[in-house]
Image (cartoon, rainbow over all chains, first blue to last red; front, side, top):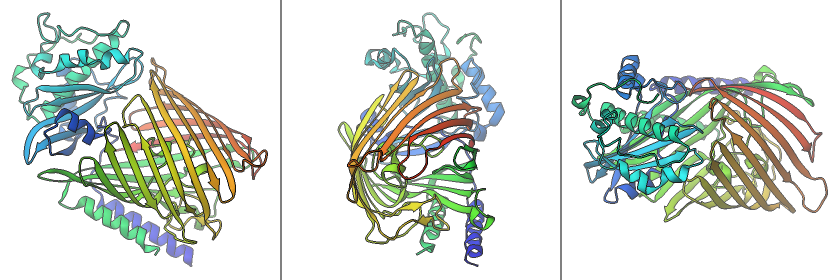
Amino acid sequence: MENKSQISTILIATLILCFVCSVSFAAIGCELNDPDRDIQKIFPQSTGYKTDYFTIQEKGGEKLKKEVEEKLGDAFDPIYESLDVPYSYYTILKGKDVIGYVHGVNQKGTYGTLQIILATDPDGKIMGFYYQKVSSPEALKFRDKAFTDKFIGLTLEDFYKYGDPNGKIAAIKDPSQKSQEDFKATIRGTKKNLILLDTFLLNKKHEGSYKGVRNDEYK
Amino acid sequence: MTKIPLLTILMLISISNAALASDSLFYKELNLIGGHSRQNGWVGHTQELSNSVGFEHYAKFSSDYGDFLTTDLQIRGAYDPNQPFSDAISCEIHNAWAEYRASNTIKIKVGHFEPAYGLGQIIDVHSTILQLLTMENIGYTKDWGVELRGSASGFDYWVALQLGSGMSIRRLDSSYLFSARIGTPAGRDFQYGVSALCGNVLDTEGMSTFPKNHLLSDEAIQKERIGFDCVYNWNSFVLKGEADFGVNSNNSVIGYLMEADYTPPKNQNWEFAAQFKSFVNDLGSSRTDDSKLSLGLTYRLSQTTKISAAFTHDLNQYHQPRDTEFLVQFYYYGK
């Protein structure tokens, strides 16, 4: 009798919970390990932050995926870049005012995941760049401030001009000796990060600067 | 008393769906596990994992000035094929907590969560066959209580006071668990920490919250520990280590774990793991250790689905015959 009562309690609780919950997402793409510490470091004047989650599935599905792939100049990796994986976006506040954003992406590297975190101003200009995770024998060279500071001041428009030999991206040199693929992956991940920011939060502000990209950029 | 967890769940869910919630994530989970044990024949569960369906609901709450509250609720409906049907179904509450962000350096958590001790504080093993030393050290992986989490220049710290009861809510024989850990900030390639705990911990068996898991004794075990743990992300390897020393009632105990995980660069869907862990139950007597060698293999079908296999071999067991086990797991966690 007691068992029947316990099973009924379990079933009722499960049913209630299943009906009450309604929003559906998948595993998180890349979120900050320690948002308070990281945000304070990049935005010392901030007084708080607000976290939002977006998925490509929710924001446009297969059509949006194709659009982002076209702008990126490369197809998504099924393990690292599935449609239903939520991306975390941190809106940085000073009082009630928005002073910037922090957002990260997972990018396939030669030895595993690269987690590329960008801090931008409200217009999407990079104010901070760092790897939360970098699996590479030359990780120290990639994490070196002399390299990461080269991304500061760049915008999505600069990445859309990736193929321009006189462009700002061409001026960034690979810091490694033998990890050229990880350098290319860093550029790809940073561009993807900015495209997703533009799509999810900036209302496609940089759409006008997109003139098409070569399809062999990351080959 | 038995209704308190249910009320907690409903309260957390209600809060999560209220207009205040700025954003939330809902994951569905399916865990299928089975294998063969030399001692027990065909098995359908491990100490920590059962065949189960469940969900996790994670929510952030914010005002115009930013996030101030995070909640997490993770529940599994588990089925144990080795039990008669009336005892085979259970409800496991894993995470059920709310964390208030008092400032950018101080958070206060209430509910069901990991004790502030060892690698379990920084590594999530809720879906893996290879587990850490938490079960051997404490007797369970999560407990009900409150925690203060803070960060200072160069280190993070956690201090928790819990019931000492594990999965189910009980308080007998003045049970409690006080734990604390201080360690390097998350996200570094090399992370390490020092932990300590003391308390009167109830000896239970099983992961069930409803009905309550089995209480093996009405008397709590007095436990004291101090431990060191570390994780090193090195190229395609993740190396983990933990060593603990302390007392269980009148016996001095020691535990240690070493694990190496490897992801082949050219086939990043695959992961190999090798683990050795040992827990000596009475340092004053010989052959009182529970020592186990495990080899694991995981293949990721996608970002949300994986298939794992593990071979575990007991090098010694204190209270029971040595066993050799082979397990296979299908795990889904996503939309």
